[in-house]
Image (tube, rainbow over all chains, first blue to last red; front, side, top):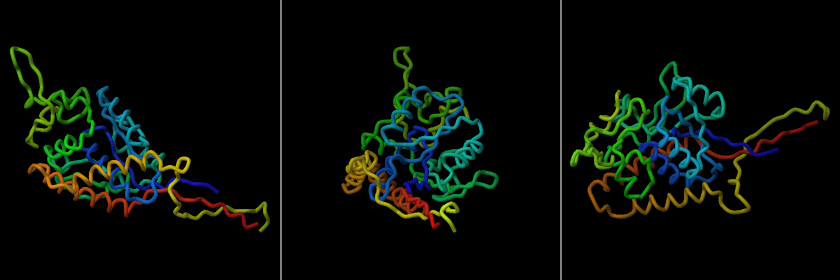
Amino acid sequence: MGYFRLDTLSLSYNGGKDCLVLLILYLACLDSHPNLPTSLSSILIPPPHPFPAVDTFVDSTSAQYHLSLSRYSSPSMKDAFREYLDGTGKNIKAILVGTRRTDPHGGKLGPFDMTDRGWPQFMRVHPVLDWRYAEVWAFLRHLDIPYCELYDQGYTSLGGTNDTHPNPSLRVEEDGVVRYRPAYELVEDAEERLGRDW
Amino acid sequence: MTGTEAYVASRDVTLPEPTENGTPSPLRALCSKLHEQVFAFLGKEAETEILSKVQARCRHTVEIINEALKRYPYGWALSTELNTG
């Protein structure tokens, strides 16, 4: 006779600003939940060429926020989720995802969406779908939530080192020296991904 | 059925949350702290228009997360091996 975990809900966490908002509110909601595990099921599918600063941030916040983070480096997101759900996430029925409406493929999503045909089947839950870019930053800064240092170097949307640059809208040149203002100074949602190559 | 032909059955029983030496787990303490912080923010009159919008977003997000927690529960259960021999 013994205890076993009955986890059916997981979190997709990559250290980015959107899933950080999601994580903080998820943890706040769990306070009224009667029966918590010792750590929270979560999954990370990093890009093929991750930023060391993002890796460091993910490691430190996984410990700080008690995440039991399963990492999958498969180039195919579909294969990574399949491996997760066949393995450590075998009880998982739903995954909280930090997708926002302005993200690629985010336009037609609802709060609860099953994965598409041909994908491993699970419910995608999108609690921050309708947050605007400036609202994400207002939340993190008002509540003084630590975030990845790359955002203070002008990165506004984090992918891999091969396809992500500081946002040109935040570029400042003074006396021949180029610098980038912090991500929270960007206002327009439409400019969020100007530092991404795709 | 004899003892040597025992079979294993299981049933799920919701149990109290495990504690560490009788004190709440570190995760529970963290959730309480963030709950207090977030709901203190939601309970205050917003100082700016954008913070007012953020409060509305937070409330909606909390509704969705709570709905997800209702549909997809977290927790611990008891596995019971029954020897009916």
